Image (cartoon, rainbow, N blue to C red; front, side, top):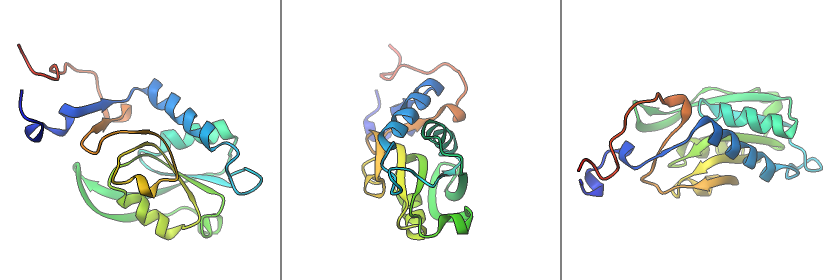
Length: 170
């Protein structure tokens, strides 16, 4: 078995199924229910694309929020992290300083994406389904923490195929 430093990211993988992301996103909604600034209500949900779209849809449905928008932030190029930049912003009038807005993403990794969005909308509430330690300070609410060196495989990025056992072949 190769030492941990020689292991590829996918060899310490956390595979998330559609069922699991649905359950965890519903759990996120339940945790956020009643925590908005308007008598517990949220004005809108903003998904960070693309990973935040499925969790945001589920959260919006569970909480009865009809106003949903997106912010598109690019922070990866072919699985290598780059400087975060906004490609598409949500409606400016709706956003204001972020008060009453629930910003949802699938995962906070280094925190660079959320740090950028937080600078734009400092009063928004930031929620992710999964969090890694480096990015956790950027998140107000999350469901599951994983180690920094864990690579999360989301169902929208996967196809079924054979995988070698974690410890390799006999």
